[in-house]
Length: 199
Image (tube, rainbow, N blue to C red; front, side, top):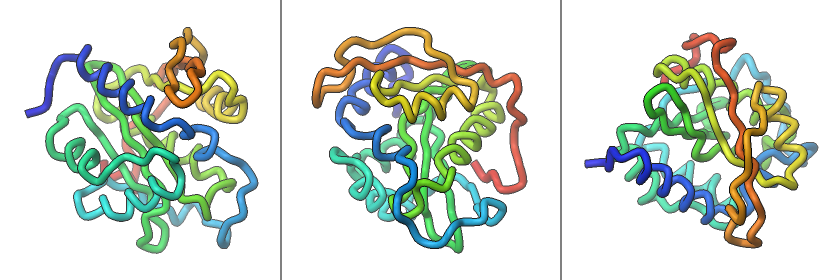
């Protein structure tokens, strides 16, 4: 059974982030060489299932220098009742995913990634927008995440989606001791649900 102590969940979430040293810089890179452009109206968003884990791990290995293991995702999907994970599909292929923990009226983004070949098309922004809508569906009024203080591109995107800085976590990233900028967004402007949203 998942630990229901919010402090323990926060500790686990921070530990997970520390093991992913290159996340924001690569996942939100603009102008990457990619395949054909994805018409966003053709994207499908649905809840992640155990059968998605192999594809998710492929994206993890492609995008992150310290990828999560299949076991980590299986544990999140089966043992953590705070966890909400979704996949972004195009032509029945998983091309991105995002996850968060919804605790009381707050949503904490744990991870978000778009397959490298499809980066630079605004899909990360669309995916985070869907996470926000799903968070509202599950009762969240606010959403938080961490980002490297030097990652101006990611910070710009997050601000575009309503996130504002609220403090720092000194030495948050274990690969180089870089500080994390804590950002929060109020979700009162976000409409819950949607026709493609299966989470």
